[in-house]
Length: 173
Image (cartoon, rainbow, N blue to C red; front, side):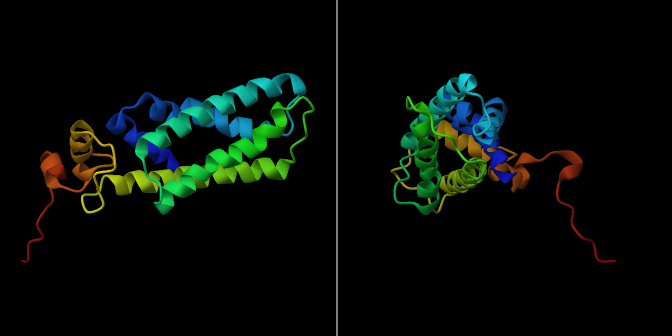
């Protein structure tokens, strides 16, 4: 899935909450939790709810740091928090309500969509023509992005390549 490329930004952004949100361990756990929440026994549901709440808290903390309010991709990514609360809210009550399987599948699709929107927003944040003063990027983050060969400008420019991978000129003979 394309949202898994968010991991490429982990060393660029270098924040604990972002690392938590995009780590493979936690995204796999989110997937399992969202897919199995409808069929899980009452004993294990508390652990799932606690994990999803912790994940949601880290996700919201990172989004608050980004300050992207009013930007479409950011707002779409922010909606995921409301969807998670809609699902885990009834599970925390004394009288646990059952969650239909189709709602869990829809939540997983919403999660994937929100993470894709977050990826699109992050890519836009680092573009020079869209960068504004309200985005809290540091000089180190910008420099790391410029030199990064997986996500940043380093993958497009020849100053970051060596040897046989240099662009070759076509010779007309």
